[in-house]
Length: 393
Image: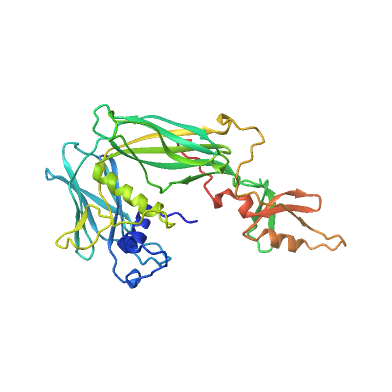
C-alpha cells in the first residue's frame, strides 16, 4: 500500500473533510464537489529556529486523481519577524522553498509570507519561536513481535509541554543472490566477456522517512517530562534488522494550537476506515489568503528549534537465535542454470550470450555446463537502495 506524505494527505483529503464529516450514513455518497475544479493552496513545513526552513507548496486535487498533487512553482516566499527582519527562501525544485541556515531570536514572533506567481498573497499567523529541549534518551525495546524505538525528554523550564517527533530510517541490506560474475559488452560488435565482478551490487543502504504523525504532551502532568514515548514500531522480523539499522530522530516543541491541529490531521488521515472510527472534521490551519479570508488554505506554520539524536541497532545486539527468520523481499528468488549445450548435445553459444545481455539477467557464477543466472531483482541491490555507504555509518 502506498504511503502519502503530509502534504499529499492534505492535498487529497483536506478539501473534502467537511463533506465527510456530514456523511453519517453507511451508504457511499460521492457529491459533485469532489470532482470540482477548485484547487486550494497547501503549505507543508515549519520555521526552523536553528537550521534551514523548508516548505513544500502544492495544490489540492480531486479525490479520484491518481497523480501527485501539483506543485506551486514560481512563488516568492519569506520568513518575517515582528522586529522587521526578513529571511527569503529560494526555490530548490518546483514547489519546494528553502532558507539558509538560520539562528532565530526566541523572543520574537514569526510568520511565513507567500506571493504566488499569480500575485496572490498568503501569510501565516504570527507565532512564537518554541525552544526545544534536548532528547534525554533514545533506545529500543522488544514488545511482543514488535521492536519499539522509544524516547525520553524533559524541559526543566516547563515551557515545552507539546512535542512532535520525526524519524529518518537507514538500514544496510544484502541482495538475495550474490553475483560473482559480470557481463562486459565489448566495443566490437558481436563480442563480449563474462568475467569476475567489479561493480558492487550485493550490499546496499536504504533510507525511508515515515509519514505517520507522532506527538506527545505533558500538559496534564505536574512536570514537563515525557518517558519512553514510542516514536517508531515495526516487526522484529523486519529486513531492517538483518544487518544493521539506524534511525535519526528529530524532536520539536510546539504550541498548543499546532499540537491540536496536527492531532486532528492525524485522526482524519489515520483513523478513518470503519463505521466505528470518529468522523473527520474540518481542518483549520493558521495560513490565510490576504484580502480573502474565506478561501480555504491547508497547513499550519509553526516555529521552533529542533533537536536530533541518532540510534544504531546491530544484529548482534538482538536477543534472537542464530536461525531467526527475518522477512525479506528476496524470499522467492531462484537461481537457474544457463547451459551452453542441451542434453542432446546441441550447443548454442550465441543464445547464451543473448540471454546474458538482457537487462534483467545477472550471471551469478560458473556452472559445469555454462553459467548460473538470476534476475536483477534478486541480485542487484541498487534497485532498492544505494551502494554508497552513508557518511554516518
